Length: 261
Image (cartoon, rainbow, N blue to C red; front, side, top):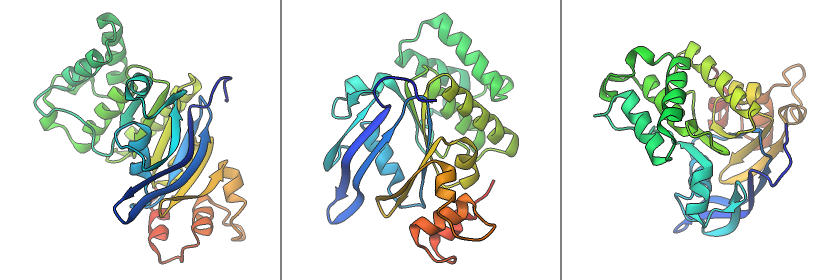
């Protein structure tokens, strides 16, 4: 689904350097509204740096970008339109799960009755109602991840940036996460999904971008990328990833491709 209006994300030559090290180089891409964009790449490829630039947390060295129609140089204009789940969910151990979400809602100035209804519904969806009034310090990694995702989408942002959202989740919770992402996209929320788990993007993504050594080496619909893999019957996303990154089977990317749920 591609609703009318400006793209959810546009970048032109976006780059980030740290001294002599280039983390992201000349990133140019367009993400349509209401789509799930799968951002693939091994650890160290530059995925997190890209997300930090797009969420205004890191200033680019070069290039430009707009998120929800606003330039990323204008933090006050961008942040109301986005939600962000970093790899480590930003939660306070001394709060209960419910208090954490109420705090997140207050930062977004959501009406109290509206936020209470959304919190209750999302806690139920992620099977957290029975633990909602326990302190987060006693939560497992998966439970903390669920709270992080809920607070990222609680205010129904135009664009949600999710970094490894299924990390630490058991199979049932991971399935709930994938179903939730699909439903949010159906409601015209754009999901920028950064992961190294290929089946997640194969199932959910409308379009995929493959980042390698800070450079976008391939972009397209999952089936288009699969068609690039000349591997006989094994025309899989895994084969496509290995093909476009030109890595040997025993390289880092093969290890990433083998990370299946």
